Length: 287
Image (cartoon, rainbow, N blue to C red; front, side, top):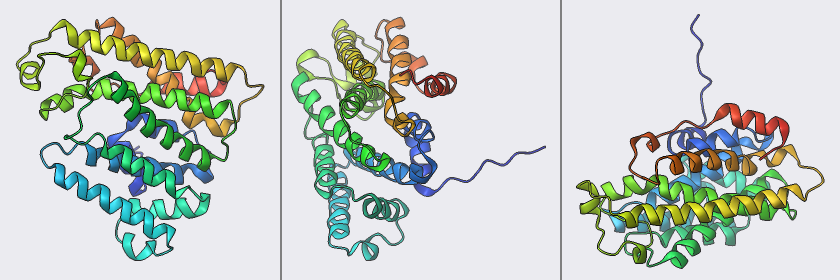
């Protein structure tokens, strides 16, 4: 018997293709909010892709400006004419209007992604954390608005998980960025290291040390998030999409430690989301 997979909406397909972990987490969202959440995540994917256009940075700027124009036109209630024929933009228009997403937050998210364009490498850990914190927390607060809650301390817990997840995503993306001729780890930790030397197979200890430091920051954020979650008398199931990434992050951090913080270990290339662990965590409310 041949079973056909259910078809995905264009935004869901984008997230499924480019951000599998977040796609799986979004499946735990309430059915009436899931597509809007996936539209937001597809929007985030589009911004990330623009920021990674190393060989064509001007094209990246143009894409980000196009999204700025879309968001502004939505605010002016002229969105449909601009986004017609662009499924992700159409879905975002619907999500923004339905949940009254803050336009200023959307524009700030676009601007934050402009900070990772090739002309703006991370000079040090502070610059890295400023970018990661801005992009991660803005996306989380918008997600919480769609999910229907921004109450503390859960919102803070979700922020901490988002920052930890973003740090891990950056570590996982290092080989991809290096292949494009770019280093996204803090430059002050990698004196003398170039994309060319890494592509040639050189692995100076400073790379693993920088990875270990970044992983430690992610671990600390996850610990802070769990403390915040434990202080809550009860958890709404609607929050699963923003809390479950802590499970995936923990699994990946364990793998990274076991590899000696070797970011180029081929086993890190495309690990599948730990679906069984995610399901158990969702059922037990343990993140």
